[in-house]
Length: 369
Image (cartoon, rainbow, N blue to C red):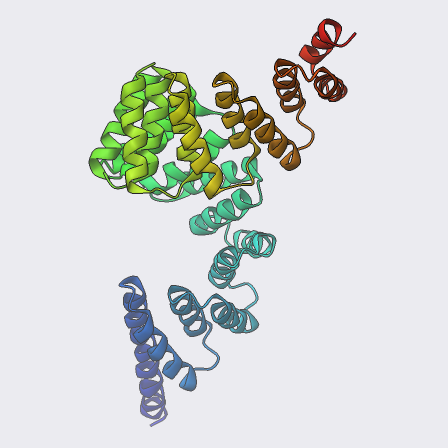
Protein backbone atom coordinates (compact mmCIF):
# COMPACT_ATOMS: atom_id res chain seq x y z
CA UNK A 1 0.00 0.00 0.00
CA UNK A 2 2.78 2.41 0.88
CA UNK A 3 4.49 1.78 -2.43
CA UNK A 4 1.33 2.39 -4.46
CA UNK A 5 0.48 5.49 -2.44
CA UNK A 6 3.94 6.95 -2.99
CA UNK A 7 3.67 6.35 -6.71
CA UNK A 8 0.37 8.19 -6.85
CA UNK A 9 1.95 11.15 -5.10
CA UNK A 10 4.96 11.28 -7.41
CA UNK A 11 3.05 10.96 -10.69
CA UNK A 12 1.40 14.40 -10.66
CA UNK A 13 4.72 16.00 -9.61
CA UNK A 14 6.55 14.46 -12.55
CA UNK A 15 3.85 15.52 -14.98
CA UNK A 16 4.01 19.07 -13.67
CA UNK A 17 7.79 19.12 -14.07
CA UNK A 18 7.54 17.88 -17.61
CA UNK A 19 4.92 20.52 -18.39
CA UNK A 20 7.23 23.32 -17.20
CA UNK A 21 10.13 21.96 -19.24
CA UNK A 22 7.94 21.67 -22.30
CA UNK A 23 6.67 25.22 -21.81
CA UNK A 24 10.23 26.50 -21.51
CA UNK A 25 11.19 24.69 -24.69
CA UNK A 26 8.28 26.31 -26.52
CA UNK A 27 9.37 29.72 -25.21
CA UNK A 28 12.95 29.11 -26.33
CA UNK A 29 11.76 28.23 -29.82
CA UNK A 30 9.65 31.39 -29.99
CA UNK A 31 12.62 33.49 -28.89
CA UNK A 32 14.84 31.78 -31.47
CA UNK A 33 12.27 32.62 -34.17
CA UNK A 34 12.04 36.23 -32.84
CA UNK A 35 8.44 35.82 -31.78
CA UNK A 36 9.21 37.84 -28.68
CA UNK A 37 5.72 39.14 -27.92
CA UNK A 38 4.18 35.68 -27.65
CA UNK A 39 7.18 34.34 -25.76
CA UNK A 40 6.90 37.15 -23.23
CA UNK A 41 3.15 36.57 -22.79
CA UNK A 42 3.59 32.82 -22.34
CA UNK A 43 6.40 33.27 -19.82
CA UNK A 44 4.44 35.88 -17.85
CA UNK A 45 1.64 33.33 -17.39
CA UNK A 46 4.17 30.70 -16.43
CA UNK A 47 5.65 33.00 -13.76
CA UNK A 48 2.24 33.22 -12.07
CA UNK A 49 2.41 29.52 -11.25
CA UNK A 50 6.20 29.22 -11.02
CA UNK A 51 7.44 32.34 -9.20
CA UNK A 52 10.62 30.60 -8.00
CA UNK A 53 11.80 29.20 -11.33
CA UNK A 54 14.96 31.08 -12.33
CA UNK A 55 14.80 29.85 -15.94
CA UNK A 56 11.37 31.38 -16.50
CA UNK A 57 12.61 34.82 -15.44
CA UNK A 58 15.79 34.42 -17.46
CA UNK A 59 13.86 33.55 -20.63
CA UNK A 60 11.36 36.37 -20.17
CA UNK A 61 14.32 38.69 -19.80
CA UNK A 62 15.63 37.44 -23.13
CA UNK A 63 12.22 38.02 -24.73
CA UNK A 64 12.22 41.58 -23.39
CA UNK A 65 15.70 42.10 -24.81
CA UNK A 66 14.34 41.04 -28.19
CA UNK A 67 11.72 43.77 -27.77
CA UNK A 68 14.51 46.23 -26.82
CA UNK A 69 13.06 46.61 -23.34
CA UNK A 70 16.50 46.42 -21.76
CA UNK A 71 15.51 47.86 -18.39
CA UNK A 72 12.65 45.38 -18.11
CA UNK A 73 15.00 42.59 -19.12
CA UNK A 74 17.48 43.57 -16.41
CA UNK A 75 14.62 43.46 -13.91
CA UNK A 76 13.87 39.86 -14.86
CA UNK A 77 17.54 38.87 -14.73
CA UNK A 78 17.67 40.42 -11.26
CA UNK A 79 14.74 38.21 -10.19
CA UNK A 80 16.53 35.15 -11.57
CA UNK A 81 19.71 36.08 -9.70
CA UNK A 82 17.76 36.64 -6.49
CA UNK A 83 16.78 32.99 -6.79
CA UNK A 84 20.31 31.84 -7.72
CA UNK A 85 23.18 34.34 -7.44
CA UNK A 86 25.52 31.96 -9.32
CA UNK A 87 23.24 31.70 -12.37
CA UNK A 88 25.79 32.29 -15.14
CA UNK A 89 23.20 32.64 -17.93
CA UNK A 90 21.35 35.42 -16.15
CA UNK A 91 24.64 37.22 -15.48
CA UNK A 92 25.62 36.88 -19.13
CA UNK A 93 22.35 38.22 -20.48
CA UNK A 94 22.20 41.00 -17.89
CA UNK A 95 25.68 41.96 -19.04
CA UNK A 96 24.53 41.93 -22.66
CA UNK A 97 21.55 44.16 -21.79
CA UNK A 98 23.88 46.59 -20.03
CA UNK A 99 26.09 46.75 -23.14
CA UNK A 100 22.99 47.73 -25.12
CA UNK A 101 22.32 50.52 -22.60
CA UNK A 102 25.92 51.77 -22.78
CA UNK A 103 26.80 50.60 -19.26
CA UNK A 104 29.96 48.80 -20.31
CA UNK A 105 31.59 48.86 -16.88
CA UNK A 106 28.52 47.29 -15.30
CA UNK A 107 28.42 44.75 -18.12
CA UNK A 108 32.04 43.75 -17.56
CA UNK A 109 31.34 43.22 -13.85
CA UNK A 110 28.44 40.88 -14.69
CA UNK A 111 30.34 39.04 -17.40
CA UNK A 112 33.38 38.55 -15.16
CA UNK A 113 31.07 36.79 -12.71
CA UNK A 114 29.42 34.71 -15.44
CA UNK A 115 32.85 33.50 -16.58
CA UNK A 116 33.92 32.85 -12.98
CA UNK A 117 30.92 30.53 -12.55
CA UNK A 118 31.35 28.99 -16.01
CA UNK A 119 34.91 29.29 -17.32
CA UNK A 120 33.91 27.83 -20.70
CA UNK A 121 30.97 30.16 -21.34
CA UNK A 122 31.69 31.14 -24.94
CA UNK A 123 28.90 33.71 -25.27
CA UNK A 124 30.01 35.50 -22.11
CA UNK A 125 33.50 35.96 -23.56
CA UNK A 126 31.99 37.40 -26.74
CA UNK A 127 29.77 39.82 -24.83
CA UNK A 128 32.65 40.86 -22.57
CA UNK A 129 34.72 41.40 -25.72
CA UNK A 130 32.12 43.89 -26.98
CA UNK A 131 32.02 45.69 -23.63
CA UNK A 132 35.82 45.95 -23.53
CA UNK A 133 35.91 47.13 -27.14
CA UNK A 134 33.42 49.88 -26.28
CA UNK A 135 35.60 50.79 -23.28
CA UNK A 136 38.63 51.04 -25.63
CA UNK A 137 40.33 48.09 -23.92
CA UNK A 138 41.38 46.65 -27.26
CA UNK A 139 43.84 44.15 -25.84
CA UNK A 140 41.15 42.83 -23.49
CA UNK A 141 38.66 42.59 -26.36
CA UNK A 142 41.30 40.76 -28.43
CA UNK A 143 41.74 38.19 -25.66
CA UNK A 144 37.99 37.65 -25.20
CA UNK A 145 37.21 37.27 -28.90
CA UNK A 146 40.13 34.84 -29.22
CA UNK A 147 38.83 32.86 -26.23
CA UNK A 148 35.36 32.69 -27.77
CA UNK A 149 36.93 31.26 -30.94
CA UNK A 150 38.87 28.73 -28.92
CA UNK A 151 35.86 27.53 -26.93
CA UNK A 152 32.92 27.48 -29.28
CA UNK A 153 31.79 26.64 -32.75
CA UNK A 154 33.74 28.59 -35.34
CA UNK A 155 31.72 31.08 -37.39
CA UNK A 156 32.31 34.15 -39.53
CA UNK A 157 31.11 36.61 -36.88
CA UNK A 158 33.78 35.50 -34.42
CA UNK A 159 36.59 35.95 -36.92
CA UNK A 160 35.10 39.27 -37.99
CA UNK A 161 34.94 40.56 -34.40
CA UNK A 162 38.57 39.70 -33.77
CA UNK A 163 39.58 41.12 -37.16
CA UNK A 164 38.03 44.48 -36.27
CA UNK A 165 40.05 44.64 -33.05
CA UNK A 166 43.27 43.62 -34.79
CA UNK A 167 42.77 46.35 -37.38
CA UNK A 168 42.24 48.98 -34.69
CA UNK A 169 45.43 47.77 -33.03
CA UNK A 170 47.22 48.35 -36.33
CA UNK A 171 47.73 44.62 -36.93
CA UNK A 172 46.39 44.79 -40.48
CA UNK A 173 48.13 41.67 -41.84
CA UNK A 174 46.70 39.56 -39.02
CA UNK A 175 43.31 41.25 -39.47
CA UNK A 176 43.36 40.26 -43.15
CA UNK A 177 43.86 36.66 -42.05
CA UNK A 178 40.78 36.79 -39.80
CA UNK A 179 38.65 38.53 -42.43
CA UNK A 180 39.74 35.88 -44.98
CA UNK A 181 38.66 33.08 -42.63
CA UNK A 182 35.34 34.82 -42.14
CA UNK A 183 34.89 35.09 -45.91
CA UNK A 184 35.61 31.36 -46.29
CA UNK A 185 32.65 30.75 -43.97
CA UNK A 186 30.35 33.34 -45.59
CA UNK A 187 31.20 34.37 -49.13
CA UNK A 188 28.06 36.51 -49.49
CA UNK A 189 28.65 39.10 -46.77
CA UNK A 190 29.52 42.37 -48.49
CA UNK A 191 30.84 43.93 -45.29
CA UNK A 192 33.51 41.26 -44.88
CA UNK A 193 35.01 42.15 -48.26
CA UNK A 194 34.74 45.86 -47.45
CA UNK A 195 36.60 45.52 -44.15
CA UNK A 196 39.27 43.31 -45.68
CA UNK A 197 39.61 45.91 -48.43
CA UNK A 198 40.27 48.57 -45.78
CA UNK A 199 42.94 46.35 -44.22
CA UNK A 200 44.58 45.79 -47.62
CA UNK A 201 44.48 49.56 -48.21
CA UNK A 202 46.29 50.14 -44.92
CA UNK A 203 49.03 47.72 -46.00
CA UNK A 204 49.34 49.68 -49.29
CA UNK A 205 48.08 46.68 -51.26
CA UNK A 206 45.76 48.83 -53.34
CA UNK A 207 45.05 46.28 -56.09
CA UNK A 208 43.73 43.74 -53.58
CA UNK A 209 41.82 46.47 -51.79
CA UNK A 210 40.09 47.47 -55.03
CA UNK A 211 39.31 43.82 -55.83
CA UNK A 212 37.64 43.45 -52.42
CA UNK A 213 35.70 46.69 -52.84
CA UNK A 214 34.57 45.48 -56.28
CA UNK A 215 33.15 42.31 -54.74
CA UNK A 216 31.62 44.22 -51.83
CA UNK A 217 29.87 46.62 -54.22
CA UNK A 218 28.70 43.72 -56.38
CA UNK A 219 27.00 42.21 -53.32
CA UNK A 220 25.72 45.53 -51.96
CA UNK A 221 25.59 48.27 -54.62
CA UNK A 222 23.57 50.70 -52.49
CA UNK A 223 26.13 51.47 -49.77
CA UNK A 224 27.84 54.85 -50.41
CA UNK A 225 30.73 54.10 -48.04
CA UNK A 226 31.95 51.24 -50.21
CA UNK A 227 32.28 53.56 -53.23
CA UNK A 228 34.09 56.11 -51.08
CA UNK A 229 36.55 53.45 -49.90
CA UNK A 230 37.19 52.33 -53.46
CA UNK A 231 37.71 55.94 -54.52
CA UNK A 232 40.44 56.31 -51.90
CA UNK A 233 42.19 53.19 -53.21
CA UNK A 234 41.89 54.39 -56.80
CA UNK A 235 43.32 57.76 -55.80
CA UNK A 236 46.28 55.98 -54.23
CA UNK A 237 46.77 54.20 -57.58
CA UNK A 238 46.51 57.61 -59.33
CA UNK A 239 43.35 56.52 -61.14
CA UNK A 240 41.87 59.95 -60.57
CA UNK A 241 39.08 59.61 -63.12
CA UNK A 242 37.96 56.30 -61.59
CA UNK A 243 38.13 57.83 -58.12
CA UNK A 244 35.97 60.77 -59.22
CA UNK A 245 33.37 58.39 -60.65
CA UNK A 246 33.22 56.55 -57.32
CA UNK A 247 32.88 59.75 -55.28
CA UNK A 248 30.10 60.85 -57.62
CA UNK A 249 28.29 57.55 -57.11
CA UNK A 250 28.75 57.74 -53.34
CA UNK A 251 27.21 61.22 -53.26
CA UNK A 252 24.42 60.10 -55.57
CA UNK A 253 23.49 57.56 -52.90
CA UNK A 254 24.00 59.92 -49.95
CA UNK A 255 24.38 63.66 -50.49
CA UNK A 256 24.44 64.47 -46.77
CA UNK A 257 27.91 63.18 -45.94
CA UNK A 258 30.26 66.12 -45.40
CA UNK A 259 33.42 64.01 -45.51
CA UNK A 260 32.62 62.64 -48.95
CA UNK A 261 32.27 66.18 -50.31
CA UNK A 262 35.58 67.07 -48.63
CA UNK A 263 37.36 64.06 -50.14
CA UNK A 264 35.95 64.79 -53.58
CA UNK A 265 37.13 68.36 -53.13
CA UNK A 266 40.65 67.13 -52.37
CA UNK A 267 40.55 65.01 -55.52
CA UNK A 268 39.31 67.91 -57.66
CA UNK A 269 42.08 70.10 -56.24
CA UNK A 270 44.59 67.41 -57.27
CA UNK A 271 43.01 67.38 -60.73
CA UNK A 272 43.48 71.21 -60.87
CA UNK A 273 39.70 71.78 -60.81
CA UNK A 274 39.95 74.47 -58.12
CA UNK A 275 36.47 75.89 -58.67
CA UNK A 276 35.01 72.40 -58.31
CA UNK A 277 37.10 71.83 -55.20
CA UNK A 278 35.94 75.11 -53.64
CA UNK A 279 32.31 74.19 -54.35
CA UNK A 280 32.72 70.78 -52.71
CA UNK A 281 34.45 72.22 -49.65
CA UNK A 282 31.64 74.74 -49.41
CA UNK A 283 29.09 71.94 -49.38
CA UNK A 284 31.08 70.08 -46.74
CA UNK A 285 31.07 73.22 -44.59
CA UNK A 286 27.31 73.64 -45.06
CA UNK A 287 26.81 70.13 -43.73
CA UNK A 288 29.38 70.40 -40.93
CA UNK A 289 30.69 73.83 -40.03
CA UNK A 290 32.67 72.52 -37.05
CA UNK A 291 35.46 70.77 -38.94
CA UNK A 292 38.50 73.07 -39.33
CA UNK A 293 40.04 70.85 -42.03
CA UNK A 294 37.28 71.81 -44.45
CA UNK A 295 38.10 75.51 -44.04
CA UNK A 296 41.84 74.80 -44.41
CA UNK A 297 41.26 72.88 -47.63
CA UNK A 298 39.03 75.56 -49.12
CA UNK A 299 41.54 78.24 -48.16
CA UNK A 300 44.26 76.38 -50.04
CA UNK A 301 42.18 76.23 -53.22
CA UNK A 302 41.22 79.89 -52.84
CA UNK A 303 44.89 80.81 -52.46
CA UNK A 304 45.73 79.15 -55.76
CA UNK A 305 42.82 81.06 -57.33
CA UNK A 306 44.37 84.23 -55.79
CA UNK A 307 41.27 84.86 -53.70
CA UNK A 308 43.50 85.91 -50.83
CA UNK A 309 40.82 87.65 -48.79
CA UNK A 310 38.62 84.56 -49.00
CA UNK A 311 41.55 82.35 -48.00
CA UNK A 312 42.30 84.53 -44.95
CA UNK A 313 38.64 84.34 -43.92
CA UNK A 314 38.71 80.54 -44.15
CA UNK A 315 41.96 80.21 -42.22
CA UNK A 316 40.51 82.52 -39.58
CA UNK A 317 37.42 80.31 -39.28
CA UNK A 318 39.68 77.28 -38.92
CA UNK A 319 41.69 78.96 -36.15
CA UNK A 320 38.50 79.89 -34.29
CA UNK A 321 37.55 76.20 -34.31
CA UNK A 322 41.03 74.89 -33.49
CA UNK A 323 43.34 77.63 -32.21
CA UNK A 324 46.42 75.49 -31.56
CA UNK A 325 47.37 74.31 -35.04
CA UNK A 326 50.69 75.92 -36.06
CA UNK A 327 50.22 74.99 -39.71
CA UNK A 328 47.03 77.06 -40.02
CA UNK A 329 48.75 80.16 -38.61
CA UNK A 330 51.69 79.53 -40.94
CA UNK A 331 49.48 79.19 -44.02
CA UNK A 332 47.47 82.30 -43.11
CA UNK A 333 50.73 84.19 -42.65
CA UNK A 334 51.86 83.24 -46.16
CA UNK A 335 48.60 84.53 -47.62
CA UNK A 336 48.88 87.78 -45.69
CA UNK A 337 52.45 88.22 -46.91
CA UNK A 338 51.17 87.69 -50.47
CA UNK A 339 48.76 90.57 -49.81
CA UNK A 340 51.72 92.71 -48.61
CA UNK A 341 50.25 92.69 -45.13
CA UNK A 342 53.62 92.01 -43.57
CA UNK A 343 52.76 93.17 -40.06
CA UNK A 344 49.83 90.76 -39.58
CA UNK A 345 51.66 88.07 -41.50
CA UNK A 346 54.63 88.27 -39.14
CA UNK A 347 52.31 88.12 -36.12
CA UNK A 348 50.91 84.86 -37.51
CA UNK A 349 54.42 83.52 -38.14
CA UNK A 350 55.40 84.33 -34.57
CA UNK A 351 52.34 82.50 -33.25
CA UNK A 352 53.08 79.53 -35.53
CA UNK A 353 56.65 79.45 -34.22
CA UNK A 354 55.38 79.51 -30.62
CA UNK A 355 53.21 76.50 -31.43
CA UNK A 356 56.20 74.61 -32.81
CA UNK A 357 56.37 75.25 -36.57
CA UNK A 358 59.97 74.99 -37.89
CA UNK A 359 58.87 76.49 -41.24
CA UNK A 360 57.61 79.59 -39.45
CA UNK A 361 61.00 80.16 -37.82
CA UNK A 362 62.72 80.22 -41.22
CA UNK A 363 60.01 82.46 -42.69
CA UNK A 364 60.44 84.98 -39.88
CA UNK A 365 64.15 85.33 -40.70
CA UNK A 366 63.27 85.98 -44.34
CA UNK A 367 60.24 88.25 -44.01
CA UNK A 368 60.13 89.82 -40.57
CA UNK A 369 63.13 92.10 -40.08
